[in-house]
Image (cartoon, rainbow, N blue to C red):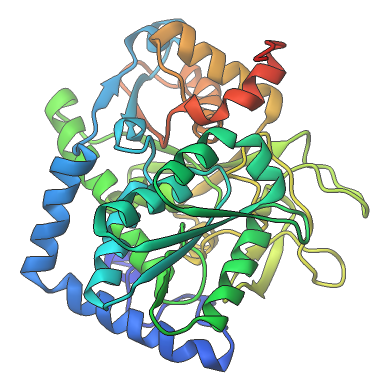
Length: 406
């Protein structure tokens, strides 16, 4: 395809056989209202000006593209650059689409915003935007994620958000999504569901890919300024896929650039019927329809969504964004996975070599870079997206590193 950048943002919401809008009939008017508002706003100079102002003066964009000189020397091979989205206000890339959707909610006259969150960064960004715009906020969070991401729960509540621990199902991200959708069905008037990744029914995948595309746009300018050339490789972790789409989108039509999305390999990708120890959809998943869209999902033999596992709360989702599934199918992106033990080693290495604490999600991308860089010539350039900083993972990491916080 000649123009992938345009196709990935197409108005139909279909990407090959993936995407679409599979929702109860009563949600269709809500999705249509949101779709209309989004496409109108994309063309509105005032909306774009207000969003650009918030990106710059509220969130702190552009975020740095940092040359990891010490890590490059340590590994040998390719030059390694890190897009440091952790320096955004609220500590992750999630603020990018939250600002965009928050302005849309305001434009549509919504008085209440609901959201789901896994690692808590999307919930924190949503609560932050609601406080900024004066909109009521409710955040749903799987009970397991609630317990292991208590710092973000604390901050969300300080911002005035109601944080509800979801006790149903596996008590993780997909259960939070299901509960948020039920809330939207019960409260269709005046409520906007601020979905946190490039998943869900149309227009969410297109809308969030559009708002996140600022990441790759900045990288293009920054890497040319620093190296005089475009990168040879782009690497990003993949849960739902928002930070990967953010990095990849602007480079989709640059055919010589290789792109690698890294999934959560957890404790290993070999499964049995009783337990799933990972969240690597492309390794053992299959095509299906769930939670409003068609894509790759981890499913059992009856087509039911499987339980997932990851050391990182933000990657243990059973599905993947439909645009990502399409790009994988046409071989525009490659996929890989990182095991928990590799992720912890990557986290430690970046901290010790560069003095940067990456989120456990982002450490999946670092684990891939550690494998890739030594295999390449020194004139090659890798850019990885550090989608967030590691403050939120304090409780997980303290346990793994045998540090008593009490």
